Length: 327
Figure 1 (cartoon, rainbow, N blue to C red):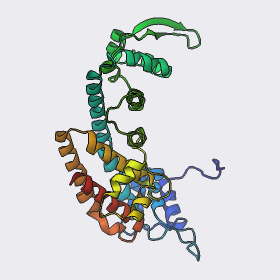
Figure 2: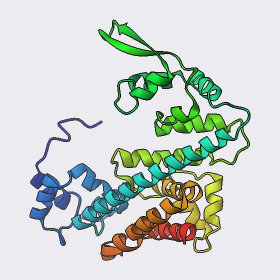
Figure 3: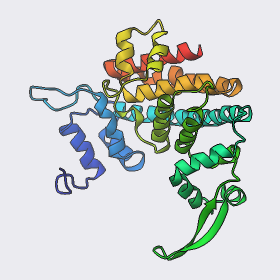
């Protein structure tokens, strides 16, 4: 296990020297001085270096342990591409969340077995922790009015925290269309699963929605999503494998490998759900934006990655899925 002695604080110049001398990273497109400025003012070492996982190392000889054909500029470009990718993913996930809620409310409105209130009461009874989340938002400028209008609130004193807090003591008067405005995406998925588990309406499999949620969380938390594109880390839901199997340009071996790459699997799930649930007008503009990123921005510096089969094959796979799903 590492400690502060093993990994001391280092300056940008020390980190550049480490990358060059210990890691074998080249500085042919970006000078060492410019790399120091980049690490100091633009992006930190941890995030920039994360993308090195997409490159192989020498396994023998005097370069053993150093990266093969990796230039600092390649890391910069991957970091920039990932930033744009996170932005479009975040917007697509918001579109999906909105339209899933619209579809669910439409189903509830036409459902003669619920008045929209009873399912909320039953759901909250089975998921008490959500009550605590709603109590925590009862002072929020965005949801406080709804919480106080549709829930019975009691002001109590928390002796352990030595402060007054709001406590929800009844939730009989909250309908589904109000609850949906207050749930996080993760809790909405629980409500979605709860409702559709006892109905025969068409729905997206929860396993697929959870993979979309995982990608959304990664983008929302500004994680380096494309930092590790190696295959063999995940297993695709059967429905996703079926859909990709319909794409003639992708053979079974490619499908199996790429869908076992977690970021790629999550992205394909996002595309699949987006195709099914998002309204035509929003879809038209968002997919136009997505295609601009993949077919124009990403290939701008394609020469950087011409010798990296892992990056090229994942990019080509994603482009094929985009083209097959959205023309």
